[in-house]
Image (tube, rainbow, N blue to C red; front, side, top):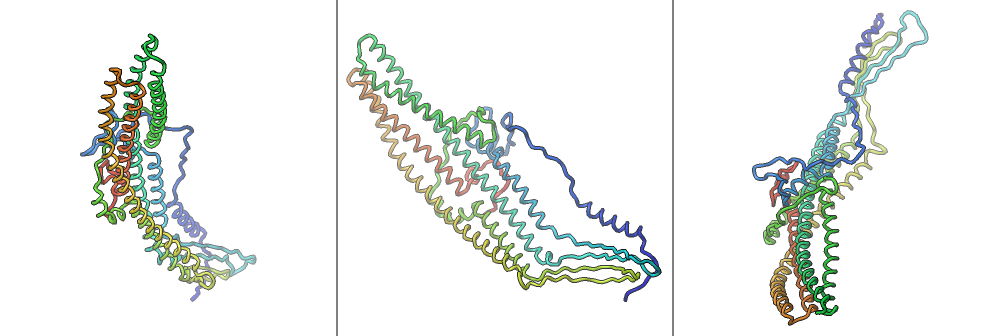
Length: 460
C-alpha cells in the first residue's frame, strides 16, 4: 500500500548512496600501465643458463650435443615464447567467460514545473539482474576449462615439434660436417697427387692429358665443398633462429646424432593408443568438448531472456512506492535458432577434423616406418659394396704408383668410391631424420627424456 510523507528526501542521503555505488564500481577497476615497444632487435648476449636436473646437466663449454640443442630450443625458441604468451591470453579469456554479468542499476529523478504544498520532485531507484546467465554458467565454465586444456595441449605439441626441429637441424649439420671431412680428405689426396704430376709435367716426364682426370676431379670436389658450405651456413642460421640467438652466433656442436632404432612391431601394436594420446589429438578432443559446451549454451539461450528487478520510487505528490519488475523476451522471431545451427555445424566440423587427424596420424607413422625399413635395407646393401670399393681403391692406388694403370682409371674409381661414401652418409642421415620424425609422432620427449616441459601430457 503506498504511503505518504510530508518530509522531503534528504539530499545528503542520496549523495551517500551515489558515492557508495561509485566506490563499489571503481573498486573492481584495473589501472593503466604503459608498455613501450622496443626500437631495435634484441638477442641474448650469451647462451642462457639452463637449470640442471637429476638426470641432465647443461654444459655448453665443450660444445652442444643433440640433447643440449633440444633443451636450449625448448627454453629459448621465440615461437614457443609467443605460444606461452598466447596461452596467457586463453587463460584471461577463460577467466572473463567465467565471470557473472553485473547487475543493472538505474536511477532517475524528475523535477515538476509547478511548485506548491504537497508537490515534490520524483525519483526512481531500481536494480535488475539477468537470470539466464545463471542457467548457462555451468556450460560456460566447462567451455572455459576445455579451452584452457586445448591451449595447454597445443603448446605441448608445439614443444614436441620444436624439439624435433632442433634434432633435425643437429642431424643435418653433423651430417654436413661428416661430408665436409670426407671431401676435404679426398681433396688433400688429389691435390698431393696433382702436385706431383704437375712437377713431372714441368720436367717433361708426363703429358698434359695425364693431369686432366685429377684436375677435373679437383674442380668437382671444389664445387661440392662450396655447395656444402652454403648448406651448412643456412643450417647454422636456421639453428640460430630456432634457438632465438643472433644471426651468426658461434655455436659449436659436438657428439653425433645416433637415435636408437624404433621397433616397428611395438609401434604398430600400440599405434591407436600412441596416436590418440598425442598432444595435438588431445587438443582437438578438448576443443571439441569446448564446442559441445557452447552448443549447449546456444540451446539454453533458446529460452526467453529473463531479467528480474526491484525498485523504489516517489512521484511528484510525495507518494513512495516499492515494487518489482520482470523483463521477458519473447522468442517468436529469432529464438536463438540461428546461433544453435552455427554451433551445431561447428561441432560437426570439429568432429570431422578430429577423425581426420586420427587417420592422418596413423598414415604418417606408417609412412615413416616404411621409409625406415627401405633406408635400413639400403644401408645394409651399401656397406658391403662400399667396403669392396675401398679395398679396390687401395689396390688401384698401389697399381697407379707402380705405373700399371693410368690416372683416368684411378680417378674414375675414386669418384665412384666417393659417390658411394656420400650415398651411405646420406642414407644414414635419412635414417636418423626418420627416427626423429617417429619420436615426434609417437612419443616426443617421452621416448628420450629432456628437461620437463612447461606442460606435461596426461596419460592417454
